[in-house]
Length: 583
Image (tube, one colour):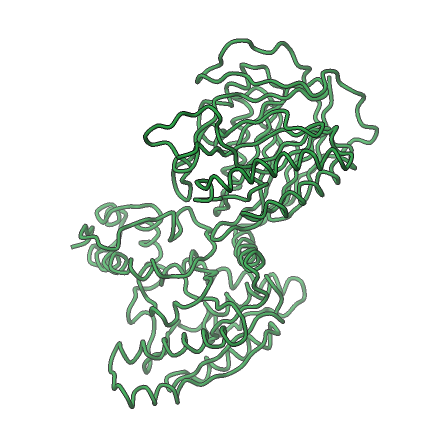
């Protein structure tokens, strides 16, 4: 039985950086070849980065991607790497598509190619195009209609791209019809909580349907609000795991696979109208490698560690890819700013994190003490800028009362942070959580200012849980827990008036988050939420807050997505909207 040493390069890429991404492919290919790989693979659209969004509609970018692919094939050969086939994702266009209504102009394609001998020997486009959640691939791409198969060392390897596995039909059953010995799928599947369990079940099921092993290669890193967790998987034809890569770690996964020898190439069309596009790289199997690769499974992160790591990776990627070296945030002594500060310190180092305490006449002594304690625990840069004199000067010119007076304090803090950002070059981090954002419990141009919002997709109850996890993780390693216990245990308050608590304006967070999760994440209506056991008047009150805060959410900074439905591309509602679920 022929043996194939497969190299799955679980790497990051940056949208638009064709030269940098190409250099990464070259570097990791060299590493894989040095390890004796027979077939080298990279993630979906690795050459252009993913997702490219409306860049796909620019013919200049499409042509630049095609030219970069051709150049990369030549570079691989010039550096002595041309004899090993390399699978690379990129942006292409269909040569055959005819202009028609409802099709993207120029017929762009989410594509991949096999590079060998200095040439592009096979190219193909994604067959199933996702059109849900954050995906708009019907807007951007036209589908492929082939089953690409490359014969390497006497094994027929069928190729697929991401959604080709997630949807029924198409290339998975076609791989069985074609008698493929291996199905290789390259992916840029964004992270969501607990998606690793769903992904494993999917890959195992598809292997049984395809009747052959499946290698599922995933991307890592971050792109704007999306984060990619890697977790590449190889399973056998029965769906049993052969090897599994670490989560959120860049690297090359090598695996030796004993696979059936290739047979005759099917001549006619397969199911779903697919036709086999076959290329032979090496028809006969060679001797197995002298030193076999021992398969292994990386240890899984527990749920809280997984989410926390995603938030760290998402912030780090956003900063690095947009050229920011340092961040600035307001430290109130509360739990939200404490969690954001801890994430920032873990992402880029405490020496690059700047915290500002901005007390007013309503700030408690313990809040200022807790902010200073956080700074001592983490080692971040810390300063105090009282807003009292600014507040008094403003009130002297324009007397305000009630909510206007409260919001003025928040806006003075926002202005202070943005002024320091402009003066010193730090990116301001907004510290609001998903529960507050859902209910509009924030001040535009106040605590909502910033360039990135690390916990905007984290429910308040999860904020507490993540803080406790982070402190325990530190204690388990013999380190100082970064978050003061008082920030975790005290009742949350904006401290904009005497004795203020969040519960003055919001229901208890444990109850609130259950209702919000049903309404926001699951799109349940009022009646369905009430039927789930919640008090009707409370449900109406919460839904009213959510519906009337859409204009605030539209102006909130981007932040890492960790849930099935984050605020942003996942959930698109009109601001001007008279439909109401509540009474």
